[in-house]
Length: 156
Image (tube, rainbow, N blue to C red; front, side, top):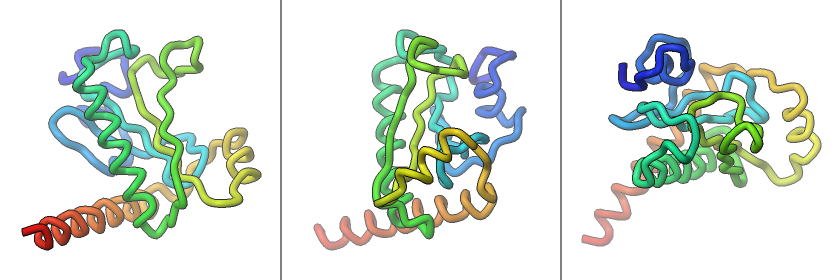
């Protein structure tokens, strides 16, 4: 098992032994929709190797997680979800309200004027059509990749 911890739900998600709506994955991390989202598109980025808290996380892997979160935040802006911004939040330890003992970065899309719906989302935490949401995020990732290719060609 990549995660190495059988009773960790995020380790099980990382190896495909627990259900999740994944939007991105590479050799060291995966990103999937939060099952109790604050807003539509709320995504979690986790390392595949188990790390309960930042204390247990290799700094380079932590940087990779934040780079992935940065890219997902940009993808949310380019997706049909049309985010105007994003909150990137990592709760480290129970004192910081970390509820799953596996490091995870929240990428929460935001829109201008969404204070009331955001506050309601904090209380209600209900899913928003996960399959179409994930498809929109993946399309945003593809759009971002296309922009990267276009920029690289223009620099040559």
